[in-house]
Amino acid sequence: MYAPPGVKVDSEFPVPQTMKAWVLGSPGELSLREKPVPVPKKAEVLVRIDAVAICATDLEIIYHGPPASILGGMPFNKNFTPGHEYMGTVVALGPGVDEYAIGQRVTVEIHAGCGQCKRCREGMYTACHNYGLNYGDVDKGHRANGFTTDGGFCEYQVNNINTLVAIPSGMSDEEATLVVTAGTAMYGLTELGGLVAGESVVVTGPGPIGLLGVAVAKAMGAYPVILTGTRDNRLKIGRELGADHVINVRAEDAVAAVRRLNAGKGVDYVLECSGAPNAVNEAIRMVNRGGKVCLAAFPHEETPVDVAHIVRNNIYLYGIRGEGKSATHRAEAFMAQKRFDATRIHTHTFPLADLPTAIRYAKDRVDDAIKVVVKARGVSAAHKIAAE
Ligand SMILES: [Zn+2]
Ligand SMILES: [Zn+2]
Image (cartoon, rainbow, N blue to C red; front, side):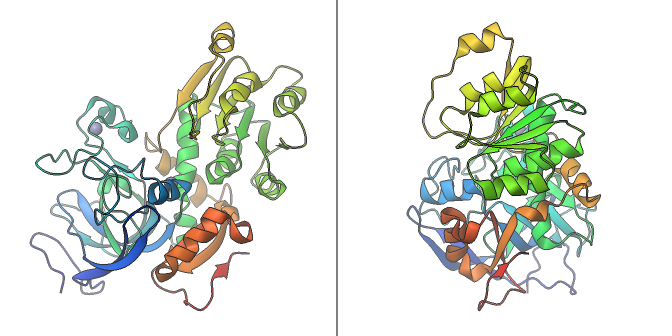
């Protein structure tokens, strides 16, 4: 049985020595292997993974590599397990841990910074200066599970206690996997200044972060909140999550439509979640003079930007990585109070053993998939669950 020295376990939550884990081979190749159950060190716990959501970034990593960095390079053929948007149950405590108890349900944020660099000390642990320096002779204590260390497409993982978020019993496993996505939207709005009550916000791109960006902006009191996108079914969900106006950019010019909705002035903030090639140039024309733009998605190609327009109009441009400054905790507080229903973006659940099918649904948007979740237990292999 699993009983590493210095680690606290409980017979009520027995832990095996080995577990099933998906491992990335060459690009796009995943295989189900047996791996040792990892051991928590100081300030870490072992989480039994109960549900894990597939993110567009997982697809990037599995098919292309970056932004994962394993042993300082590409993540292929290194026995690496991807997956980062997971939740579960604490089943073992590393030495000295008393902040969490065995049996407690938690969701996780991704980045455990080194805790000692300038940015970590400022709460910007997603921009840790020791990012990925956790291999060979170097151990800076940095972990970003699913990016620089093993992730969640498996049965157990170790997490620094700084990455854990306690969740209420009324929150389903599937909903809990969405806390980190809402946390990214919350971080974006935080970096824009945070006080968006009564101010106008455009969210561009109705992917998971954009849709929850609408929900979080509304919960923070923004008005009006305008969502732009190309697919009517996604825009409809945006409306259900609180968007005051939606604009289908295939049907009308997005910049003109935003300005029309704001008496020709443009909005105070844009949260850019589309990654579209011309997104920055459109966003800087959607905001009013002195407005702020947060970039939460990245285009594949380098794109020319109209810098003169930014300078002439005193526009602020922010890039965010992930979910810093404990934004995940603040997003969870909104969800625990049911200020919005994040499960509107959860569409499918598959067993962990069917991960390749789940990835296909997420990648090809089969059956209008948005957030696809896999679970190690409690889902029969015979049928997927289509939510609602
Ligand atoms: Zn993600
Ligand atoms: Zn750091």
